[in-house]
Image (cartoon, rainbow, N blue to C red; front, top):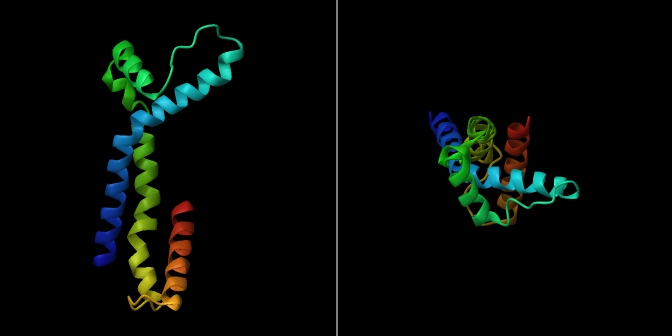
Length: 121
């Protein structure tokens, strides 16, 4: 059905996005930990996003930039399968007819809230 197709597409798109953004998640986490440990550590290992990417790839290999990717892909796939996949169906169920009206805007907000809640659970 169309809803199942939308759900698979939404989950797959989010999973792919997680693969491409995971290196930035790795860098963000390491820089946050470095900031927390700054009181104890004398040396700053990572001096920015680009420097962190290069340093991690050089010292640990490019694969290190994908550490934790399976968890990120799983999380994004499961959450967005519902959130993105069910949105068009819920919107239609609420009576959205595709016109640009204030009532349809309210229905779109309601559909986004319902599917967002479903994805968060």
